[in-house]
Length: 115
Image (cartoon, rainbow, N blue to C red; front, side):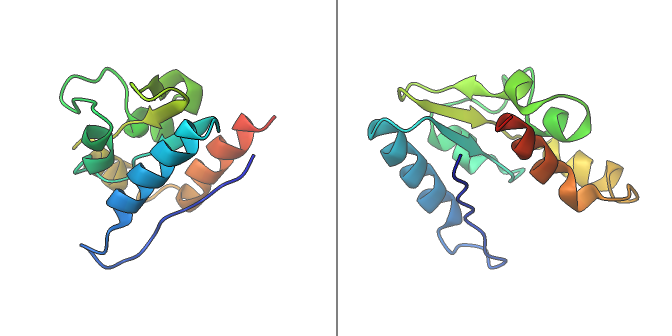
């Protein structure tokens, strides 16, 4: 498993556009690709054609009590799966603020995907 993170503190720097297009391209090349949307604005989620307002489970659920496979959904692009986000991700920031090791939750969940 290879991991690619697209991160920058500055808003408007093209992170979401880069992540969505890179994920789609890798999937089209035949790579099984998982895109994790970590933005409450859910631009990556809507960018792959998912309506963020009609989701049963999101990254919020993966961070708080479910596994990534329980939350991930297939997109219309063969080989591209997304862990979607919506505005409820903002709630996780508040709920997890006092939790010890909160910055490692996603990393541990992703590591479980590899075995």
